[in-house]
Length: 84
Image 1 (cartoon, one colour):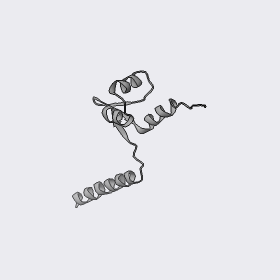
Image 2: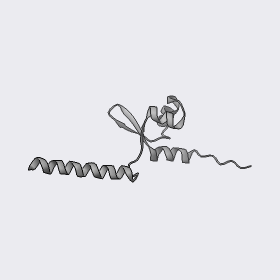
Image 3: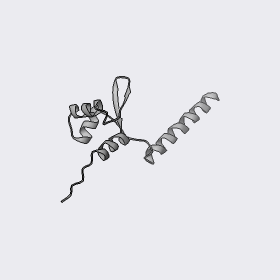
């Protein structure tokens, strides 16, 4: 009986997480390699932005991760408007 209740709780948690993903409430997260591919720049560019404090990051174990929110802020802060 207790195992059934635990299983139901786990299923409810999984369903809630799937709903969040479906409704795009889960923020995209990049590691250095995937961020390089997304921005089409080299690893040294990402490392320089990170070391200069222009790109926020988190460290999980030995992996450095970047959120979509922080990447969007970087792009927004470095946007250049051209006047013709």
